[in-house]
Length: 509
Image (cartoon, rainbow, N blue to C red):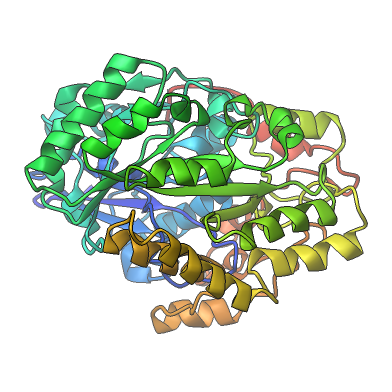
């Protein structure tokens, strides 16, 4: 690598937009923060770091960026593996001496193929990047005191991000954390304070924990009070976090959070059918109906948010329609901020059961598993389910009901909420379920224009444009643009996939 200048580090959060847009999605909260935590491990005296988040910044299409790095670090959700491979190919083509690194859920789910494609495969947490830095360069290029590079996130719409725990103490069958099986742990007070110091002043803070509540009462209370100290000092106007259903069994939890500046809580209600929740091993949510939780939170001035998962393999259209109609008819209940199909994420118990039970459809690609298209056989005919799914995911035919509900919900709780919460309650569903304008730079918008129409069915969907190289590249890169297929034409797991998921080494070069 060249000497006499800082080492150039490119960190990319790879992302395949399920709606086939290459343009930025900058209003989505939360943002991916792993790249900024990774960036903090590179010593700023010796390293220059750039972060590109394909969700926030849009698809990475610029040749100048691929030519720039000495090291390219990739992360992202498991379904984005093909995208990380494409981006690594571009970097290698334009900067042949670049060292490539992969980490996060992709590396843990597909270690063997990651070892083949990338120079370094990290299956641990972000701290493992320190070992990679020392291996590529020397200890002097590793930051002595790692702190998130929140300065690189600007602009961030006034929202700061914080992590106080890792992993989760539950084992929902569809969750990638259940497949990884790593222990739930809390950050130390010093770690949390370091993050808050790096964050600086913010309008609001989003706690990124998979489960802020956890299974240790004393650490939960300590974390709440620590964040509350910063809130009372005026560092931010309020904060929000994700908790599991067991949190609500103790009313004093809401009181404690509210007294320490919490303004919003997200919880995975997931489905209104208890039988579906049981198949997800989601026992902690069996009593989590959104109406009662919204009312409980509102008593303390906290807004409630939740996600919903529909499962056409277990539910009929009529049953799903009844749930959606029930929510729309009750202005006290917020609309879900996330509406998705069940995703059989590779490595999870749910995926293994789906594969054993022949529920996976033929010709499913890893990149199809984005929650916006069918990858499992529904219990009703495809010709009936697919059109309904298409309309459901964007509330087609319900836009007036959606708008009316959002405004009525915000008005109903206006006395319990501060004005910012009321505005968010009215606007958030409209942003989520109305079509994305798809505004980006000209190249991103042209890339979106080239995309084939989304069919909402993995068996009929055509490859997105990203699988056609942007630039003329030598023949040996062709394999990097071949999608990783999960099932073959008969619905069985492919040899390519079975080989990709074998092996598990901590650090491979």
